[in-house]
Amino acid sequence: MVDLKPNDLVKSCKYIEMGACFALDGVRSCVTGTLNAPLLVTTEELNQDGVTYDLVVSRRRAIFEAINGFRDGQIEPCITCANLKEKPYKDVDFSWLGGEPLPAGMNIQHFSACNQRCTYCVFTVEDNFIKSQYDPIKFMELFHKAGKLQGNNWIDFSGGETASLKDFDRILNYLLDHDLGTVVVYSNAAIFNQTLYDALKKNKAILTTSLDTGVASSYNRLHGTKTFPKVIRNLIRYRNSGTHNLWLKCVICESNRSEDDLWGFVLAMLALRPNKVMICPDFPYGAAEVPEETLKFAAKLWYMVEELVGITPIDYSSTFGDAVWVKYHQDLPAAIAKVRQEGPLGRADDIEHLGPARIRDIFKYRLGRIRSAVWRSDLRQHLVPAGSERERKVVNLYRRTIGRLVGE
Ligand SMILES: C[S@@+](CC[C@H](N)C(=O)[O-])C[C@H]1O[C@@H](n2cnc3c(N)ncnc32)[C@H](O)[C@@H]1O
Ligand code: SF4
Image (cartoon, rainbow, N blue to C red; front, side, top):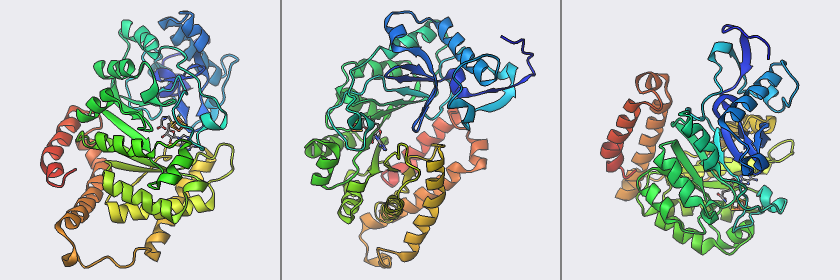
């Protein structure tokens, strides 16, 4: 190890310093989009109980040293990653697990076993459905026992199908009991889970489900099972928990880019009333760009969800940094603007002819847009910092007053 002074400038990244992504082959610092950071510890090491707190810290340091050219080692993909920043050595700290809500900074996906066979999913494409490989709680406990496990994380609990995981309840309860931060559970919702329902009811977890279409035959073909009725029934149950945390997604593939799929999805959103709607092109693994038809479909779906459901969708891929995604992010706003100009829904009806529910929806939609703009502003960051106690109070107050009035 070279002798570094506190003010020496080095390259480091929060993910290497405090992240943990529980992958099939071991624990990595991060997994962003289709890129995987180097392994910190392998599945074999974890299962042979050969992993200690000190070992993890030293492996993080080894990656950092390789990136900075102080020793040999794997430097891809970190060396070209936008998250790598220059900073004084005194600000580099490898001792903690978690502590900041880093997107994809704490991912739980140490299994790929699943009850569906989605045609777009890499596990289906590679026929790679593998049972749970190790116990992520054992790794977290190393930091917990050292007094170095911190909350305020963004945790993606994915897989495989989470609700079919034997240890699902135990892991979810551990994350919640240790107050580790925002837990997003990805589930296809074909299996109902009571622990998840209870966490949703208390707004302690977020559920993300890829519905992708509202057409039963299309869903069953795309997901490789005939589970559409169960998925809809379970989503209605989760909806009826009263949660603020039901997020639904449309992954756009060649097979669900039809007009029927588009309308089916929009009508399903009107029925299920998710709290967020996410739109994401099928991950273009290895492809040079997102197909033009997908961009057009995404733009039209975006417009229809905004106009008819009253929710501004989220670009699920917005934090992905590969060139393919950067181009998609650049092209999407213009494509939406073009659809808006074409106005595929015709002129909006006169407001007097609308029923009270629709007027409330329009009000809710306009209010939502103003709220999003205010919430994203610099002034809000200054007055109500993200993750602060004040933010919690403001959000609660909003939900108990305006949010309740407009049924959010
Ligand atoms: C791999 S799944 C695992 C969790 C759960 N089984 C589910 O389907 O939600 C996690 C997420 O990745 C998304 N996903 C999988 N393959 C994708 C692809 N090729 N493009 C975009 N999203 C994809 C799924 O839609 C899902 O939201
Ligand atoms: S449900 Fe999830 S894990 Fe299962 S095949 Fe579909 S995307 Fe993959």
